[in-house]
Amino acid sequence: MTPPRRRAAGLLAVVAALIITGLLSLAFGSNTLSLGALWGPDRAEAMTIVSTVRLPRTLLGVLVGAAFGVAGAVIQALTRNPLADPGILGVNAGAGFAVTLGAGLFGLTGVTGYVWFAFLGAAAATALVHLIGSAGRGPANPVTLVLAGVALGAVLGGFSSFLSLIDEDTFRILRSWGLGSIARTGLDETLAVLPFLAAGLLLATLLAGSLNAVALGDDLAASLGTSVRRARLLGVLAVTLLAGGATALTGGIGFVGLMVPHVVRWFTGPDQRWIILFSALTAPVLVLAADVLGRVVARPAEIEVGIVTAVLGAPVLIALVRRRIASGL
Image 1 (cartoon, one colour):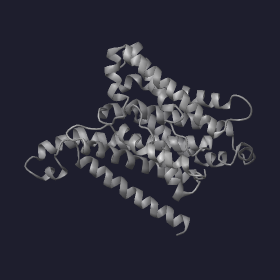
Image 2: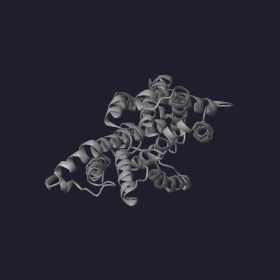
Image 3: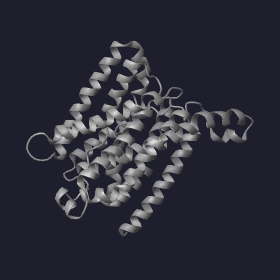
Image 4: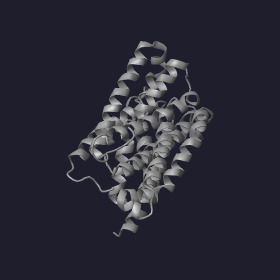
């Protein structure tokens, strides 16, 4: 199958998978009531559950999935590292640490209150990882950036846990948020962050051509007329908007930004325009599927979506690391 036909077939498959997982998210939950009840005698109760609980949750899963997936694709392109993502490079940890500070110092309890802290923490972590990775001789290389991100993420995660434990109120507020959940965020909070996520997705889409040039190397990109510095700054801004906004809503969902861009690259090729499009559609499939699985296996309780993606993502990460040649960027 030629690459254009493979991409077209893949796009149809991804859209179909997104529709199916969206319907499953509406149909299944900790409550055993199904969508079939919409046409039964209990349709009023079913409509209330779907419209006030499951539909906002499904929309949130689509939005944050797309945000984390595209953020991972942009980071992988900027660092020329197929094993990079907002979690591994410490971006989520930076946003989480800043939110912990905001909750502890200023008593912030809602998404609209601490979203700015999440943006600031995500931007600071991204800049600090690149600064650490660039220290010493020569430019930053992918391995150094990953090591710097993992180390920074561990440090910031430790500080966040310490601050939460010494303040019982803060710990209670952030305990479930830090696990990565799409169940406790209301529609109003989602709509408040939506403009930032939309701006990040738009910016990433507009940068796709420049990211293709950056993937060839700084010198060749410059010779092709691409401003590498501008592309990196705008890329960092896109990642900050996407990862910061999504982390503010969910507390951070790991491995989505790592797995999805890497997998879609196998059948889209190295063109960032297709990678970003497929990541924006495929990542919500993973998030919604993990959320439905977390609702069903522990019914009537629930497993946070961040825990499910971590369980699924850890073996994938091991498999990617063991591959002799990662998929090209």
